[in-house]
Length: 103
Ligand code: TYC
Image (cartoon, rainbow, N blue to C red; front, side, top):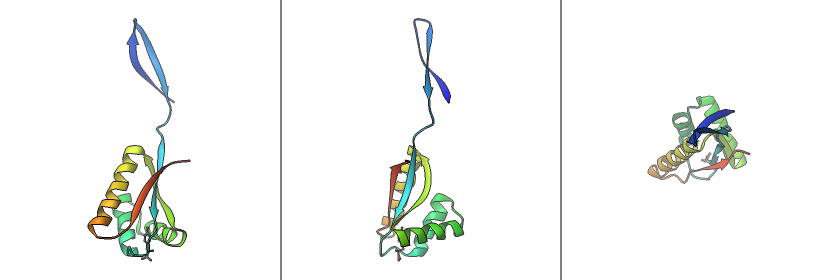
C-alpha cells in the first residue's frame, strides 16, 4: 500500500491510503476477414509478444472469438486499443480491440 500526502490543513497533514491502480484487460475480437499474419504482426509490434506468443493469442481469438493481449493500467490500455483500431482501419481490416476492467 502506498501513502500519499494529499493536503495540509491547519498544520495537520492528511494522508490518503492509495491502493494499486485499477487494471484493464485488452481483448482482441475475432472477425472473418482480417488476415492472420496481420493480427500476429499487431501483437508483436504493439504488444511486444514473441512470434510464438502472438501466434498462440491469434489462434485463440480465431477459435474462441476473443483473446487476451495484455493487462495494463487504464491509460496504457486506452492507448493500445486506439493503436490497434487505428492500424486496422488504416489497412482496411475490420479487426476490433476493446478493453474491460480486470475482474
Ligand atoms: N478469423 C481471421 C481469419 O480467419 C483471423 C483473425 C484472428 C481475425 C484474430 C481477427 O482478432 C482476430 N482470417
